Image: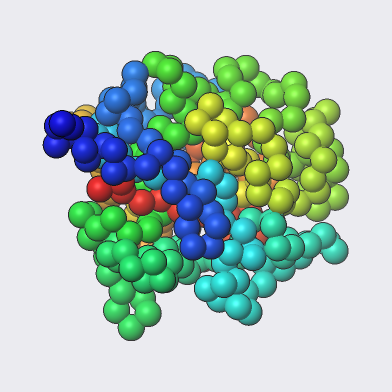
Length: 290
């Protein structure tokens, strides 16, 4: 007979598929070589910004993470008229390109809509169409926490990656969709000698997956994460499965995008923030396993 723990783990599938056809993989940092790690970057690291304060976190709850960014086609099942736009005649709006020009509120509302569609408990509290907070115990769809995103992007065995491709800058082969030679006339900036073959956003999953079989974590579009934006305390205690404040004015954006080329931006510890939609920010889904 199975123990209760074994029975519980047997119920938790290693991969799930949403009703929209999105794949989410199961991650259990508690069972990995790196359940406890330091977010942020050292002050001595080239390109490090003031909001990347080093602070300890611990991940104990198993979670699912979508393998790709949410596409225009998937988002339009929620908001049929959504238009991700174009730039200099280059479309951002094709079916398989990542959805952009979505606010944090729209991204969180999409999560709740999909939870309702599948009969899952809603993660976000919603009042008159506005997200006003969240329920930490709920297992419905949500945005990844910043700590989950950082772990999924950076943890490789017992090490933390600095860039998606390793430790040295610049990359020598196409690894992510950045502001490359072909994007110069659109973005006005460029990663010299780099060519990923895409002027703007690439169809989701076009480039190589990372060490966790996740696509576009370090490029293509920046990604809304769940957490309200704040600058961590340098002397705080270790936080376990942190989710941040219930609500706030700005939310964290993680990962570089097709508009980025500088050493500061291409590092996996880079943090941006905002609340309105942008042409270089999208999102991916997450949910707790239990």
